[in-house]
Image: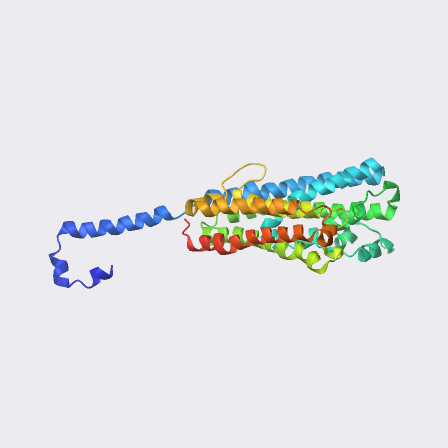
Length: 362
């Protein structure tokens, strides 16, 4: 356009009508090409919100219901078989929760549900103080406790014993009372979280799916896609530089997540599987994921990142169980896992996020 600006008015007047129209056509062609280059993220955002997030939270809420039923059955009939069923139900509920940590934004953050569900590390002395108190361990009382005295890891403390099989006969009536109430509280939180995203509830899913076209939260599709990427960055950073690194660097088993059940390695793998779910747009079913956008812009980056995510899952799985022992006995394997997850974080920050920020979305 600068070339046109230096032409004299006389020359412009001598241009033929055809030439003028031709210039206009060139300009229209450029605009059309720019429109073709823009990526329509509507399907991707809808699938992320519903196929991934809402589906994960629905599974979490269903599993929490099964855990509550198992815990109540244990309280009613405290047999070894019922204890083991409750333990398995706890582990099953952990899976969708840990995968959901790849998108710890929206209601799970603004409504304080993340710390209410999963504060760690917990101090068993504080938990024991609740048991030793004279308070009636009702659901209302437990709901008012500190986050570190309820949620997943309080339930874990009551069901497990440092990787050893607890005896059902050792469970006291106070422990069973605490167990039922804190599991009731957990189920209330998972239901709240599901409804926050569900159409019949607060429908946060629509705020994501309608980014750029009426969403009060996300004024553009780019803003919503960046939120997705930042969610993955946050959990990659937490796994590499917190969940694995903190106990490893300090050689301190009290800093280990899921230390009572020895479920740590599964937790960490599920965190990275959550990244994989968001990137590929899948949970129980497949949808359009972020990978389709990245592939449309940089196929090599897409293929590389998919390899890096799987390599991180594998590297974590290569740590000998239990993790709490490996932080001192198998430091090479732990460091390899840290490096693999850090690579995922680096690619997200330096390549994928930048690609999103520099791209045009409809």
